[in-house]
Length: 134
Figure 1: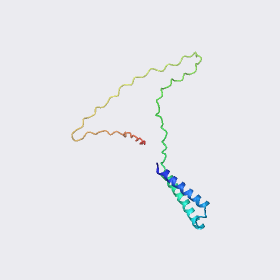
Figure 2: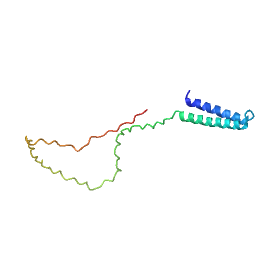
Figure 3: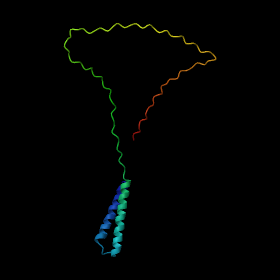
Figure 4: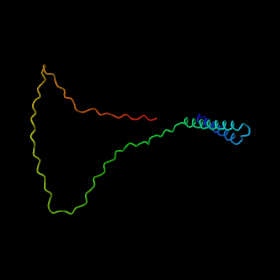
């Protein structure tokens, strides 16, 4: 049995005692009956609050987001049929050949001059950590 249930039961007993003392004031002196009733009501409230604070907390889980599926590319939309035109489409000019560029030979590093290592400007990609699930 959980401890919050037992505290709720003790609080209910204290409220029952307070109700009995309120209804039957002849057994004790009138002032003592009111004091005992007030004490049992206060104890009942304290036990009920203690049971409420000791109850187990409900942990709400975040809804799981399904991983996005890779959709297959849809076929391109077909344009509406057009009426045939009498003028043929102009043909593009033939491509002009580009002569290959001459590369200058790279001189070998000498003893006095150490070889320079080119640094890449790219930073390594960072990965996010996944949250731990309970």
